[in-house]
Each structure stands twice: as structure tokens, then as C-alpha cells.
Length: 267
Image (cartoon, rainbow, N blue to C red; front, side, top):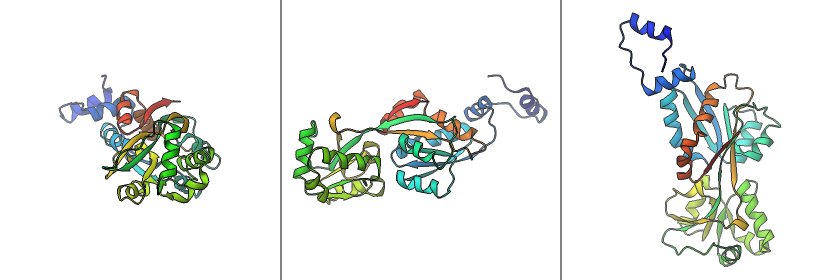
């Protein structure tokens, strides 16, 4: 790596032994020797992946990432109310909707990763058959109580439409306990208050007291695709853009997979 002449000269003048560590090397290569705080507003689904990747990014760049994880609808409400973020991470359709009230930059606007809806049961309970749409239909009809997210969210809305399409909305809706995963939905299943839970697998795969049965079968599945966007009011977007580039790098695909996501990383 070629070190900027002024930097090398200064090290010689003050008698400092010149050693370039990994973090400094990244900052020199990116031309960013100043640290910045990056405020990230995100839905809860990517939380596990981001909390593992952020410390590595911080060590490499000197930047600091501050996360706000909430329901996607709550993030939208925060932004509409005027709260400011340096980087937004939401399902792609909600980013498009957010742009109507919060102007967004072209750079940093990517399709990042997708995650599917899975079924959970209490640990130790016999996993149900979810291999076909008919098997899931029977499971829903036979259940005493079921937990999933609010119909105003992408997952909850999809599930509500699904039971309508299966012709069992009248029987199933009274059994549904509306509880987001980020607010403890998996705990209802772990405690036996709900027989099953339907959540994005990234939100529940590390929850205690439950077993992830697997993904819903293709006829009933709906992948939530997360994207990133930088508001135009972020006058110094370089740090946020560096974070987007870092987390979307294909070499980190396995990290996303471990968190339940499939990295897409398309502009």
C-alpha cells in the first residue's frame, strides 16, 4: 500500500515508528481518517446480522454505528414525525413509501438481503408437518392459539391474506395472538400460550425455548426483501455509504446466512 507522503513525513519528523495496522489501512485506502457516528433506523429482522457485522466495521474504520431497531411501521412513523437517521434499512416497498415524505439519495439505495417466514413451536414439542399448503391449513385449523405479527406489517399482512385465500379466515382469525417477534412473540410459543408462531426466521432462530420447524412451503411463502437508503438531509453521507458497502460485500454472505438471510446486494 502506498502511504500518503505527508503522513510518512510527519511520522519521520516526530520520530514515530511507522506501522500501519488494519484499521488505519482501511481508513487510508478509503480516504477517511475522521470517525463519524452513523444513526441507523432499521426494522427488527436484520438485527442479529447487523449487530455482528457492525463491530467489525467499527474496528476497521473508526466509525461508530448507532442502531434503532423497531417494527417497520414504527420506523416509518419516526421518520414521518421528523426524526432523522443517517441510514434507513426497511423492506424495499416501505423504502419506496418512505421516499414520499423523506427525500432519499440515489447512492446507497440497494436491495440488500431477503428472509422468509418460518414456523416455530415450543422446545420439546413434536414439530408439525409444514411440507405442503394443505398440511399448514390443517395445522392452523387444529391449533388452539397462533402467534404472528400485526396485519399492518409485511409478514402479518401476508399471513392474514393467506388464511383468507385458504378459505379459513373465519376459523383462524379468532385464534391469532398479535405479537411481533421483536416484542416477545416467540416467548408466547415458548410458554405454551400459543401452539405455533409464524415469524421471519431471522427474528426467532436464536430465541430461547422454541424450535424453528422450518420455512413455510413455496405456495404460502413470502420473502421480505430488505433494502438500504440514505436521506438527502445527510449532508456527509460517506460513512453511511461505507457501511452499506461493507455489509453488502459478497464475502459476508455466510454471515447473513447464519442470521437467516440470503444476501442479494443489488443496486
